[in-house]
Amino acid sequence: MKHMLRPTRPWQVLRPLTGLLAVLAIQGASAQTTITVASFPDFDRAVKAAIPLYKKKNPNVEIKLVSLSYGDHHNAMTTALATGANLPDVMAVDFGFIGKFAESGGLEDLNKAPYSGAQYRSKFTRFSYPQATNSKGALAAIPADIGPGTLFYRADMLEKAGVTQAELTKSWDSYIESGKKIKAATGAYLIPSAVDIKDIYIRSGLKDGDGIYFNKAGKAQVNTPRFQRAFELAKATRAAGLDANINAWSNEWTEAYKREKFATQAFGAWFAGHLNNWLNTEGKGKWRSSQLPEGAFASWGGSFYAIPTKAKNKTAAWDFIRFMTLDKEMQLEAFRKLDAFPALLEAQTDPFIDQPIEYLGNQPARKLWKDAADRIAAITVDKYDIVAKEIVDSELDNVLMKNKDIKQALADAQAQIEKRVRRR
Image: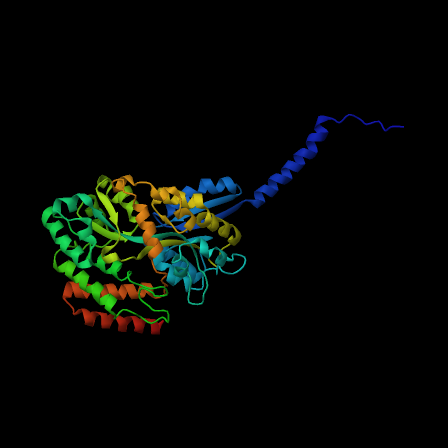
């Protein structure tokens, strides 16, 4: 005899379903994760561009972006690492601070489990990983973008002065001599500050394993022919009246760019975006890019993502960092939006590299930057790089403003750096 089944009433189905949906909703809510990303302009634009793309793949993760000015951000992160308070889950770090932060002990070693960052090393430009590796071999951060050094120049000003690009970049001496012709013909300064030429020169001619200020053993390398030549070039530039003696990133510097007072600027490739987006929007079609004078290749800048050891959401933070640095489309998105040259090798082979840049007179300048990136040495960083830079800049100021002897200035800088390092 068959069992008689009573017809199921609608609300008898709905009640258990409603209960199940409620449980799932609670579980979904509990699975929601919010990670805080601390960054700085213009690098923060990459995070802004990433949020909708990342959310499509990870709907249960919210991204909270906290952005401060360049100096304020790194000062805040320095304090946070020292105190263990107000730490983000993901920390953006600029090249200028990566050595200091890497040695702080406050960042996760991304070579260790569960990160195992060493497996990705071959995917990145070869000089980028050493920049984020501290003296103990710990990988403090993953590179997001790099700064192949390049010389930006005003093609219209060179033409008016009768100077060719080959003449401008043949050597550093011809660069200065070209600057004299350009100023005479146009009234424009060759460069904003004589310090700029020092900065780019001390980054060139390095070999794998070298540092800008320190060698592999951590000994200061300031009282050397490299720094002497850099100081001599800076002094010659100032003596010829070719620099405006304006500090980079100041209001005066920004205004001078808008008024088209400068003919050249040696910087990282990322500077093209700064020119186009805010410094000299009226200069579209007038600027060009070339390799550095005298066949030099140097890295200028670069940005990284790190995870503080006391971060609350390390798993989600690591997933987000991998998306920002290992996802080809995300790397290209940052490249298109920021002119941030990708650290990921796969992104460097995209046809986008070959496309003309309208702002640079339709020059396919990214091909130049790719060539430079392939030739740049894998230099190391040191936690005292910032200290050394401050001392070197102070002594260069003594040379430029007070006519201090260069050899004495460098000897004094070397002694001061060694004293500061011993004290710390």
